[in-house]
Amino acid sequence: MEKSKRGAVRSAWKAENTIKYYIDRSLDIVALCLSFSIAIAKDHLLPIIFWLSIAVLVVGILRWGIACIEKRQAFQKMCKQVTLVEGKTKEEIIQTALQPTAKYKDFVPMYFEYANQESEIFLYSPQANQHLVMNASKIVVEYQKSKQTLSKDSRRALAYIISNKLSHDKSIFNGKLMGIDIDLCFNDIDKVVIKPVCYYAYVSTDEMIFRNMMISSDPNYYLAGHRLSLHPVTGKFKDIEHSALTNLIGINLIVEIIVQEQHYLILQQQSMYNDVNGNRFVPSASGSLDRKDYKSFRNGKDKNFQTLLEYGMYRELQEECYVDVKQYTDTHFQLLGCARLMSKAGKPDFFAKLEIKVQHEDEIQKMLAIYDSCQKNQVGRKHKELESNKMVLVDKDSFLATTNFDASLSPQLRYVKYLLQEESKKA
Image (cartoon, rainbow, N blue to C red):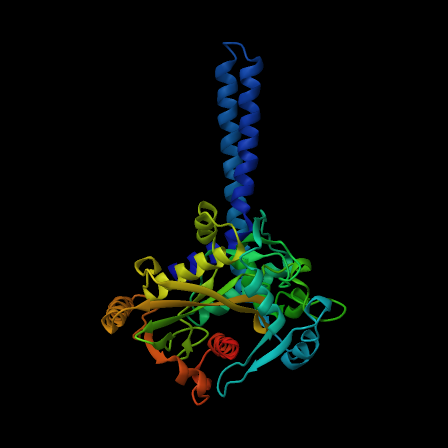
């Protein structure tokens, strides 16, 4: 393997916390020996106990190192042996999974069809969106420690995903992210439970819903990916609080610029090299809530769920559009709604709008110039990309009124468009 590919496999393998386990056990033994020496050792026995402790430490490190090498080699071998096979079709899985559970009885599917790319389905509810907008600022956030471990099936799924991404020169992301452990029923809850998420646990469960695989060295082994995501009896999406998935918190922000009574929306056009939305237009900022966002939230004054989402969306806006919200004095943040993504096994995504009022169009031009300059600096740095993203300003009314360009919009942006249209009807 190339150096970068070896690094990706190594970091994926570390997701099981094997290193931490062996270090902890070794330190436990050393601590025990040192405590023993302090408690009962005489002066002439102290050197013996000391060197005995060193020997125990060395043995522990050697055992840890051998176990590391063996498990890493086993994972690398598995990366070459896992292959996809035929199984339950995507249509069959969708037909069953979209049947709502009691908690999601008001949710309906929204289909996003594309000619040459994979279609997407969002599960959404106008009632749930309304409850989120009304109550998110009143719902407190509870952080729950969660030790992410990979099951045998998830580990084998991860082996396929890593090898597949590497063979197609796709990017492998290893962020420290946040998941949600409570369902999207914001009318009858007073707190939201969030948890730290391992990225590799996420891709080896949530992204396997339409994949079926086997291992060449084990002909009796077969994994239907949807079994990691759906209820084993009903085949429906599991409620989030009963799900073993990571339920990563997706965040999407659309920025509305208001200047001299004119309303513009900031869109991004992804480069052709983007893994998911190549050449499509996407919201101003999209991504996932991570642990940095929770740390900023924890150190802030407001402790509600809306504020947590706001921290994450502003960070994504800074990273993707180079827009620092703190530089603007007249802003307004508004949640729009939420949805569960079919292709990600029901992963929850949240959507919001940020209004920024400026006095002169020169400020908009400055914003565009900064974006173009920063994007040009990225060309050629990542996966030899020869094309950067683009920031586009569109008239809000024209964007909402026409459907001519919907095929070039990402599912997230098309859903944002729907949410903005619903908002305008209430105005």
